[in-house]
Image (cartoon, rainbow over all chains, first blue to last red; front, side):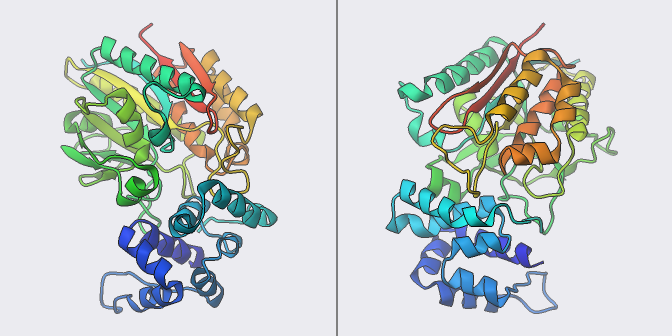
Length: 111
Length: 281
């Protein structure tokens, strides 16, 4: 369930230009706001739960940690690109990303 | 009866869009030439409708409701997503659908073949569908039947299911009471990694041995070897997003395992790109 929620959060950010901007402006506040935005138990299911480690990794934009936690790699790379590309070059980000995930090999990312 | 007059497979790498200009840069000449060859073959074959087998990249379909096979029944589709416009510079496109052929393939009242298709009447197509069409039918004047095969969110269909899919598409076209000329296009990769330690290696394949073998299955028309070789472990080992290669097994099955006229992993600044083409015998 946990990797499912990480992937859900990354989609919520990366698929919307507005959400990318809001997340980059204040990652920790965006994560808190997203978690608070879940509807009640009588509504259409849209549960939002992150572990402390996942929440901390999103608050820190720590793609290496998210990779190790089992985030879906396709979603994670595009999430990373969306939330970092404004402050670095694409080749540099690609290099940093590969270095960050390499020590973790291929974690089980099946939700 | 309708006729399957052309079958092809192309890459859908969305990073091509910003750099594959006209004239193409030197390192993309082969890619441009193969897209042009397949486009010319589609035009020469006077195709009326294209069945496009691709893989949504967790845009339309997510793990809250994750079908293995989806066929589109809509009259029209919107093409690409806000994030793909931002990231890849892709243009929004409107794509016409073709319900009659979709029903001939899947069934109308009952699912008639071995594939238990989910159906969709409202589906935004991602780059897996839009990118090949931007190069092959740039006017978007040929309707399509989109088929999504889940190649990115396990559990995935095994290779034998792609064979069943290709045979069902072939049989659906043959059964369809129409004089239409139909093409089958599959969209995918050779060995490809996104989001792992081997991503974007500057034109090098993440697994050249897999690529050579996987091109050979199509060149030789060896469906049995393709099914035996395209195991989850082998394909995923070649690169974490390589499973979309397996879409082409549906193409090979649809042409009854005929050797391809064109079978190539074309070099480029990106990972080698799949180009396969079967014209009429």
